[in-house]
Image (tube, rainbow over all chains, first blue to last red; front, top):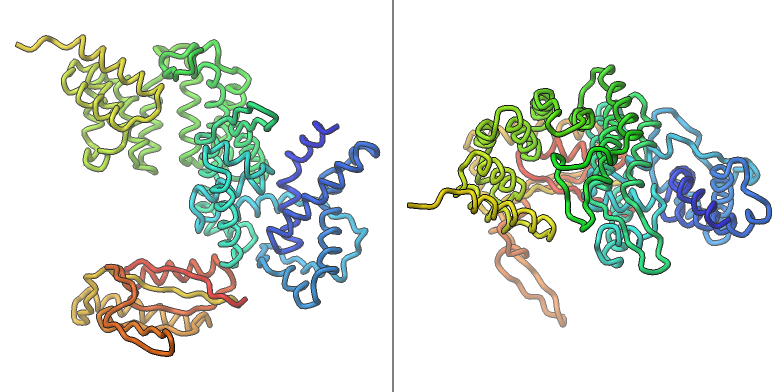
Length: 424
Length: 116
């Protein structure tokens, strides 16, 4: 039973919290109310069974408990203040919930829009990326502080302070609880998508030596992306993000070898790729293409789809990838994209072509950017410029802390050293 | 309605040369921004400040008051002016802050006032 309750909690916690925040006007009150409701559920459901609408049950119970508590603990003016602490500026007018007048037995269901409101609140651009990610996992993911801390390899106290500070900032600044207006929506949505993608790329699977729950942040990120794509079906970037993550996730089994070292895309055993995820990713990319409203996540998804289409590295349609990178670079002219493009150009036109693409970048700006030196070193080595390659590998190694990657780059440098012609 | 402080920040090259084309342009832009604030009802109060070199720090301890010449923060970044605005919520305040930053062509810090 407790397994099922955990599953229900994981699925419903975010949605219930989101609705309670709207009803109560306060994040902390909402969290406490939902936690109380789950405690009641844990006590009652084993004997009574799981109700047909568990989310609605949780939300109703949480709301009722919160109102009880407000009545018991507050004076009259404070009660009304609590209910309006967060401004609700919705697109559609809504009657203000007056806790005094609400029937306690009126059923309160989760509202899909509330989940969206909460996503936009958690990923408010006034918060730093770290805070956005922590808040999203806490309020929408239903993860506890310890789980989030372990997943991002920071001390629990640090993560707790980060979350408290973020909530306080939103409250003290009177952050509105609403879906952004159409003019603001594209930028605000990109922030939400970027936060979810950060959870996917930066989170680590927490290993449990004891009874701690194992948290797979990739799965969490995919779950959030699925919810976003479902809640915002008219936003192709949300669909694009999901497609990108599914296509990336499809390669997971092939990405690491038995020793835990990273295997480059070119060297992966493609029979280990997950074809079901690839099929779904392709379907979503095609749906995005039909919309013809390209955006950065959609283009990155399309690039991943071209890779997924190739039975082998040699069979990859690099011309198509270069074209996609050109498109991406036009809207996102940053170093990461430029490097990806240079790698693709090198596959198409040879290492000299890739180096020419790299030459368009500013080396001073990229001097501390490890991938720039790693890519450049590889292309120089392939172009037969071994001395320069070694210099670049050295710089890359200076900037690399990851042991598996250090080992890889060291081996590459050794190969370049062996291959160069002896000096006269 | 909640109130927010918008403060403008200069580095230590902040010398008000009112005659320079930059200063003229900025003053025009800020003037237009101030007009908008008053029209929309967001205006509470605003003013530019004389440079940090004009400041005096006053301390009171044990019944005695002492003075130091110069600003409190011994940093090269100093506040050059501020607005107090009222706005419905953070997003509305951020919109004002963005327009303020564009008008004075300098970073603007947004801080909520205590109270509401």
